[in-house]
Amino acid sequence: MVAQSRPEPKFDWFIPIDGDGQRIGTLEAERPPTFDYLKQVVQTAESAGFHSQLIPTRFANGLFSENQPLAETWTTATALAAVTSRIRFLIAVRPGFVSPGLFAQMAAALSNISGGRIDINVVPGGIQGDFERLGVTSSHDQRYTFADEFIGACKKLWSSPGEPVQFDGEVVKLDGAMVSPGPAGGGPRWYLGGASPNALSLAGRQADCLLMWIQPVEDIAALMERATTAFEEEGRTPEFGLRTHLVVRDSEDEAWEAAEDLISDAATQVKEQRSAQVRGTAMVGAAIQARPRDQHRVTERLWNGISTVRVNCGTAIVGTPAQVADELVCYWDLGIDEFILSGYPHVEEAERVAADVIPLVRSRVG
Image (cartoon, rainbow, N blue to C red; front, side, top):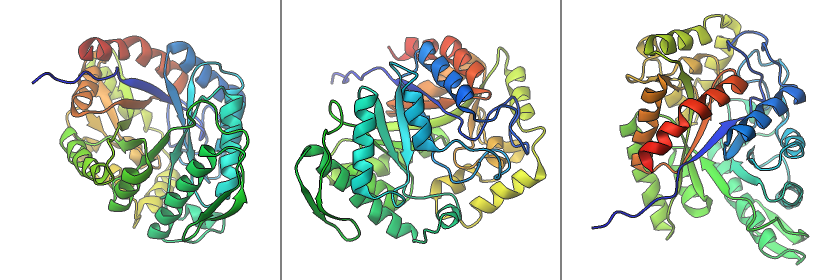
């Protein structure tokens, strides 16, 4: 039996809208998320050859004290698209805060302005208490129902540019909504993250790519198996993306020292804020990321110390360039198509990862 060839893996970087620095979890960011700084991050990633950049969605700072400056997602992505020419933007969106008809117009406009360089990461869940901050109250199940119809409505609007669209869902109702022009090219791809039954079911119906926060290889393999079943039930073939931090240094000892140093000045107030946001969460993936470990060691190479000060993905691969590349290749072998990487601070680490890690991965999977 001849093995099917696979496209080369895609490597993406991350836009730190909470702020950045040599150390994280402090009350204030060493590098606040000003437009000038985020522009530097994005342009560095573009120059380094990354395929895309994930820009997350937040309603309060999720890396430093929650009252610290935070760059709003959509406005920031729009501005950054204007100062780049090649790199794509994977923009995280929480359905429920902008009407689907208006959002479809906004995304089509940005798609055209950027030359078709945007994709959408739908985030139906949320950090504990986040929706309520802005006056939206709904259950985990309700958010997934809305997200399903949100995506369906956008797809219908984009497939018939300039034509009045009727959409009669359980929660999304459109009566003659129109989008003209439609998005550039084939339109944005849809990414969805999650590990709950709701998330996998929705991904199977609507997503082009399922995003997963890094876990041990065997756990990711089990999650991919569940997801593949959900896609196959809809007659679809899944693509998979993996989100992880990296701590890379020339020696293994230096890498582990750098990991511990990253959170060495973390403030008690910040750690308490993060703990409260995870406690009792319905988000399966977030709970897994924050699970207590001895010295934060998840496996020989995985370290979840970042989860003590950061919402959502809080696990890093730690090691030398060769060790980190070996770990990424293990996930590639499982069937991961796209890697969304990050490291602190994001300017210097984008250059390090692009120069020292990615070429090793490419040489081993080519």
